[in-house]
Amino acid sequence: MQNPDIARVFDEVADLLEIQDANPFRVRAYRNAARTIRDYPEPIAELVHSGGKDLTEIPGIGEDLAEKITDIVKTGELPLRKQLAAKLPAGLLDLLRIPGLGPKRVKLLHKKLKVTSAADLAAALNKGRIQKLKGFGPKIEEKIRTGLGAAQVSERRLLLHEAEAQANAIVAHLEAGGGITQIAVAGSYRRRKESIGDLDVLVTCTDSTKIMDRFVKYGEVAEVLSQGETRSTVKLRGGLQVDVRAVEPAAYGAALQYFTGSKAHNVELRKIAQDRELKLNEYGLFKGTRRVAGATEAEIYAKLGLDWIPPELREARGEIALAREHRLPKLVELKDVRADLQMHTSATDGQATVDEMARAARALGYDYIAITDHSKRVTMTRGLDPKRLREQWRAIEEWNAANRGFTILKSVELDILESGQLDLPDDVLADADYVVATVHYGTNQTEAELTRRLVGAAEHPWVDAIGHPTGRLLGKREPYPLDFDTLAQAAARSGCLLELNGHPERMDLPDTLAAAAKQRGVRFVLSTDSHQPNNLTFMRYAVDLARRAGLEARDIVSTRPLDEFRHELKRAKR
Image 1: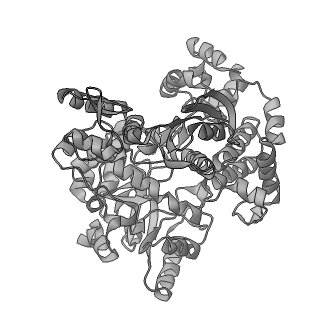
Image 2: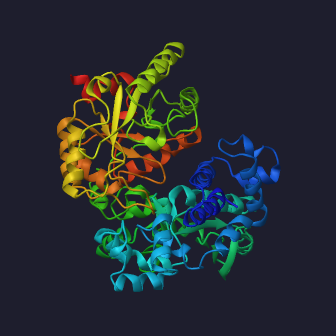
Image 3: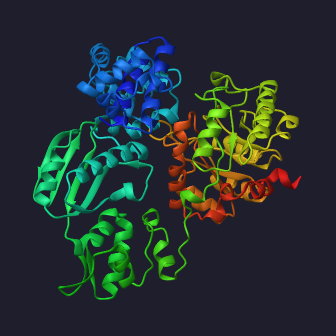
């Protein structure tokens, strides 16, 4: 089992407990365990089978949870989950797939309206009964109505890092069998979209029958949908569909280009081919019946008069014109990043000390980081008031004095209050090295109110960046209403940075908005929003976002040496 599969079981246990009014601390323990498992950098199932590491050494995993993880890995199930599920109607958990319906709202629907399924919910909507419940306004009702069909779909999209765990495991399984010359995972996964519906794996090999036999025997396969000599399709236990195709080496580049997509990008390429009296498909680029290109993607693009286009840009958003004119951006790479500018410690809701986070970041090759524990408004995380924040900053100054060659910036994740005021006074913010302002409360305000709050923060002299600007949580919470263009203009005008938050559950800013902000002259920072050292590797997802937005290293100030970074901040100009 892969880490996302184990985590999903704990997430379901937490949902079931919450619907059944269990102790909130018990619910939180399972949610935290799910996040820890999902984010853990090593395959936990391998640790269980090898016995080489005590699971209780993983932060947040005690003996009880370690035993449950072992049960899940060895049996594929957790008795507790089955016991809890047996107490509820079978269709109730399906409602959690609907945007806007978390466990609390599902519990309320079940308790007050006797809703037990998607059909019951649809009937309650049609009769106008939903609006009568506290906390169910017109916006929530419309969101539920729009997303109702999701409750009846058995498949679900995986977040990019969940899909990555599955993809890496499948590739490793196939390669371990030998005989593979080339292998790649194509589709939206290769384009690095924030969520993935299925996986397309392409191989060139010496014996395709052997590869297909090995693939369908992969341990996570729940159902073999088809098996042939050159293509097989399976469904994994978590519901993910995976295709493996064996292609001839002369067509590998063409197949990789075709199955990477996007569909709109491929349509434009085929039009270019037709204009040149050529035919482009998954088998190659043809002049009549003669294949003139196909072994590599680069030769196909070259024959069409284009520079090779990085997969992240293949969305038919103008990249083909840039490739024709040799003006494609030199996309930022992970090695360009010198700093991580949002992370949390055990002073608030993190799971490690300042020292532990700093040493982990230094080991990744960074030059500096920002410790951005929450300000006091975020009470559920024990947010820092001015006194505690200044104490932390004094400790950071002492750490910096004792550790040369690496710098911790005195920072804070500052809440933008519902009134538009900031959560800490100016004299405190003026003493910071870097301040990232965010919205956590009042997200049900109007577009005008939320825009005013964010623009006010962007224009404030001691706010250096706006963090996770749209507030979305993938698959859980839609972005709050926001006039983003107005925010982007304010950020460009004031010199405020916008954050690309690479935490896999956020991926915020969305790539389309980041691209639009770049056109307005906005500059960016990259962060992971880490809550433990293992999360720091999420920076690759922030880079994915940046690349999909067409950003270069020069657009991102956290690619600069520390002195240059400080000089680029708004506060440096005061």
